[in-house]
Image 1 (cartoon, rainbow, N blue to C red):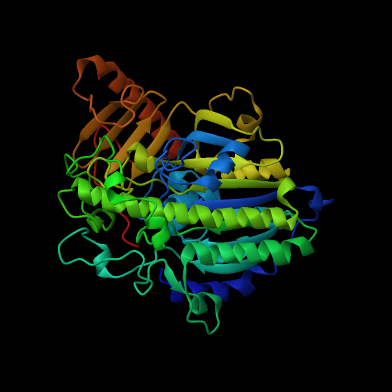
Image 2: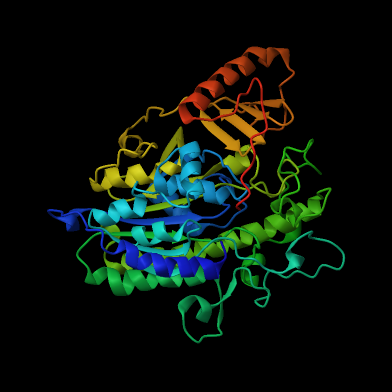
Length: 492
């Protein structure tokens, strides 16, 4: 959906949702606040304090130290190559993936209240700024106040693709190349030709709300701050690029010049960011820009956290940091997130706040889409019956959290399916009738496909059985024994 259409729908939707009454509360001011920060394309191996000494993330590191971090957080797959749409639909509706697909196809959640709407009707002041990427009616129902809101991807010039290459002069610091470099006036509805990075624009809006609005209210707040970063075009000021000399960038151990086979999304928009075959130089170029925009986003998050402290509300606020999905950026010969590998299916999940043990590490597998139920649970708000992803509060409170799932399900439209246990992963490509099997304990980078190894024959059968059980529970229409083409959606 383009920005003009999005804003038009938002305006017409606003009046239609104002009449819905809020639920009466005895003392809403006693409830905790929530500051929710969601990045776009932030893979799980991008936080210095957890697993990547190469990346500078001092403010995310402080959240790791002050709260809990989940080391195995996943999204449940996607009906579209725009994986962020599927992930955010599940996050905001609480619906599992195939029911969320039906909700997205209808372009709204219908009579099932979404996350922000549930908290709003429970007495929360709800605020959003940044990337939304869902329908305008749900946006208006969910948030009583809005800063600059983006519908999704921020396009730039054709030079952002097929890099590096002779004759391509792309410069991620060039503020005239659009993308993350935005004219403030367009987004703030005023005359202002100043160009500002998207992450700074959203941070400014969040800071303004924390400093000017939050202290004047007695109700608790729910703030949803959606960064477009570090999604391409990966642009950042020069000082952040200077932190990452190209010749110092590490090449991931699972680097390949090209993926061994066409897995159905081999030449999508994400994949043509770099030329084929991939070179180490190209991967260093893209990872340098990826790390730079992450560090720039981290700096903006630091500004927001400082404003939260200045507001006087930090002591009663849960801060949640996550992403919609991960990204390959050179792993497996891929650049995008349209795959079932760990780099794309996993994302960070950090939660800090009242009663959460500082430095707590939770290794059990969870879905990011549990944030709806988790915040309701922390707030003492009834979790709506349609919400399928469970609260993570028991895991946050337990000394040794019990597992919620025996396996994580994943899919991509008609071209990929996967099931992942703590130890192993099976990926299935329906259109190729091809499997992959990985031993994640011995091979965390998924470099050795064991599908033809006799020693893993029974493991493969066990994974297929687990996969079929999850298919049945979730309502996946594909028959893995007789895969058939299911027409992919064409609306995105």
